[in-house]
Each structure stands twice: as structure tokens, then as C-alpha cells.
Length: 112
Image 1 (cartoon, rainbow, N blue to C red):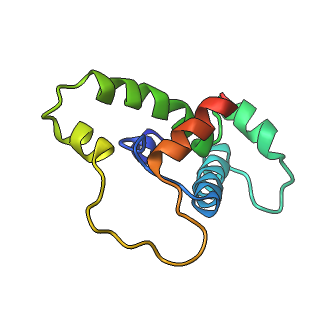
Image 2: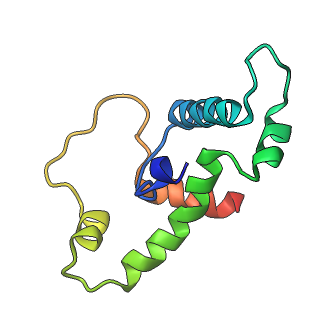
């Protein structure tokens, strides 16, 4: 799962994206455990047997660490420029406002 998790800290994931990542991880764990879909194994017991946590939760735990690294970077580094820049003359579509990276990091900090 480290290959999937690599570089995932700045990702902004919707709930459906998180669910898809977790389903992918559970399918991989079923292959590792050599079980079928018809065998009833709860998700929690599968995570315990493999010593793992849901992939979406792992990404959520890594975001504050990545933010700390970006905050310590010099101001001319690209990740810091991109993270704190404001789009110019951007028009927002009608409807609910989209969540930005800052909104997700605040939500993650509340959950942790």
C-alpha cells in the first residue's frame, strides 16, 4: 500500500474517492489473506490481521505532517507557492463552493 500512498499528502479527496481507495485496499488485503469475496471477514478484522488501517485514514494522518514540511520551506519553493497562492480572475461555478486544501486540513485536524 506504500506505492498507492506515496505522494498522496496534498491530494484533496472527496468521500467517493476515499471510499474507492479503501475498497481497492480491501481487495488487495483479500488477495494477501487468500480469501474470497464470499468468505465473510469484517473489514476491521481484515485490517487487524494485516496490521493496517484504511488508506483514506492513513492519508488523513499524513496531511498535517506534509503541511508542516511545506510551512518550513523557503518562500521561493514551488509547493509553498502553489499552496498559498490565490487564483487570479477565477470564476466560480454556481452551486455549493468547492472545498480547498485548507478546508480538508482543518477537517483532518478536528478528526485527529
